[in-house]
Image (tube, rainbow, N blue to C red; front, side, top):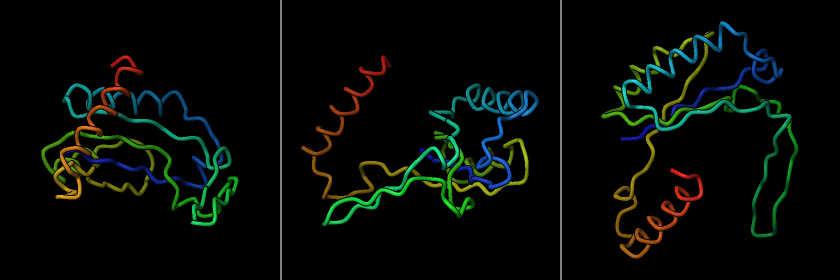
Length: 141
């Protein structure tokens, strides 16, 4: 199973744009190396502060764009990992090892084809597979 681990933002740290210290970077690199060594890390990135982003509200009448920063930092995402582990319990055990300050972390299972039932027809699954292959080729995977 794949799980997305979402690190919540913090108005005192992430949203200020403060760069991590060398010690913090070293500690996080060590944790990431453990994830890689265990063969569970599929992807992971940190995100820039919300002041460098935008929110887009889509409606049938068009789109409304709001530039950052956004006021509710605790509702924003600061970074993520995608882990491939056997269960939610395994994802939780990895999350408990994340280094750094006190923080709230959300874990969400990534949906698979079978989660969509009959609506995800074999034809749609084939299109999806081709699209993923094209993306992998573009990235050089």
